[in-house]
Length: 61
Image 1 (cartoon, rainbow, N blue to C red):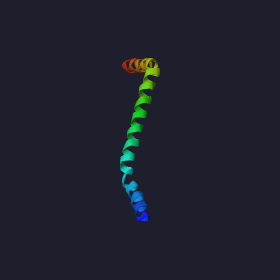
Image 2: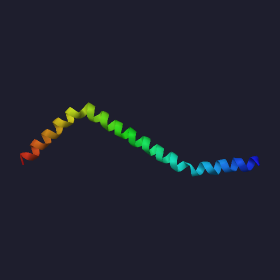
Image 3: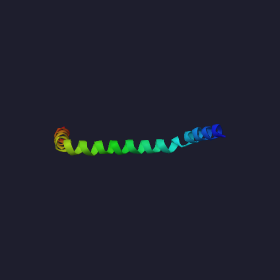
């Protein structure tokens, strides 16, 4: 009886991995979004200057 219970618990856990995978992907997406927001916050002015200079160069062609 105990062996059957343990076997069912192990087999049942394999089926539950889909939800765990979705949760892990959700956490990864949240972490990537946070990194993008922090990066733009820190380097926003430098990026703005870079793209303005690039636009001026392209406009001069």
